[in-house]
Amino acid sequence: MSDRQSDGWLIGYCTNVHAGSHLQETKDNLLRYAVNVYKQRQQSTPLPIGLWLSAQSLGELNSEAARADFAQWLCSNELNAYTINGFPYFDFHESVVKHRVYTPDWSCPERAKFTRDLADLLATILPPGAEGSISTLPIAWGSLKDNQPKLHVAYEQLIDTSHYLAKLAERTGRIIHIDLEPEPGCVLSQSSDVANIFEQLYARGDRDIIFRHIRVCHDICHAAVMFEDPLQPFAQYAAADAQVGKIQVSSALAWRLDELCPPDRLLARQQLELYAEPRYLHQTLIRRSPNGHVDFYEDLPDALSQLNDDASRHDEWRVHFHVPIHLKTIGGLGTTQDHIESVTQMIKECDLICPIEIETYAWNVLPDHQSDDDLIRGITCELNWFEDLINA
Image 1 (tube, rainbow, N blue to C red):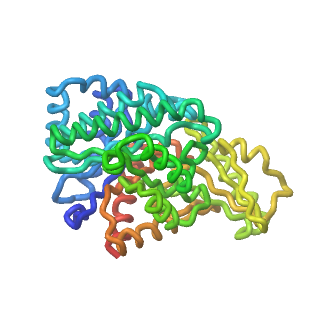
Image 2 (image 1 turned 90 degrees about the vertical axis):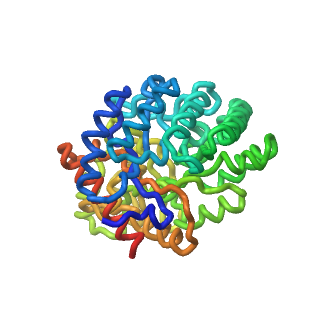
């Protein structure tokens, strides 16, 4: 098995798919899943993983000695924690997560402290001179207009955090950046929202420090759900003078009614209803044809409740449900795998070097998920499929 990190890319998977509520559970799950993925991959270098830690777990690593011990534990188990997912704060596998995943937002001091503590940990784990990325939520849930009262505080906390990271780089020799991750329904819902946020940040703080330490995490699934062209976001980021700090490789559910005859549309709808599960929020956008108007629903059950037998056969649905990236179709439903293919081709042509993280966190709530072996095998299939894609 070849190792793409030797060619400049670091490609791993996000371990929020088997998250732990506290540190020992996190370590147990890494041993149960990540180490077995490493064995199945049979690679000659440590397995790159996107680390996720709850606030409780991070609190157990509140000393330099504890962080150093954890870094050594990862190394001894052939795990390379090259990036951190700093989006979820609480237990990511509670029975109901939904909107709670967006709290605390960037107007809350808990969010800034959590992110800085993650940076301290990452600076301990990374080798000298390395860069580290921490993806984080797109300011807050809700529109820019709805969040106006709290934005001033959020901007100040982001800027203060960038200065903290600058000092951390001076002290440790490791550049850590936080990467805002646009997501449907948030202040940053799509790439066009990035320009406004970075304009505000640059106007309020040190542009060089912000440019270096605040970047964008591009999640391919999120952009696809918003019906963005696969490559257009990268032009938007460049126009906003915002660097891409991390790319999350992910795929959304898609349902094009015009590709199915009436009986198959009914079967596909029944399959889609199985994905209306209670743990995570599955924002759903429906593009109405022929006028192209897009309707937004906070969650899949909300969209399904509006569906009736008179729905236009030209409608196209995109659902924020992270499905396995190596699947082009799932039963009668499609996926947005083609967006991954387009972005990967662009990465190769432009030689865009940044951390790449496969983030299919919803394996455990897939309708056909059954066992630990399914998860280990599934993660391995995703890594192998993407390696083949980027090597093609």
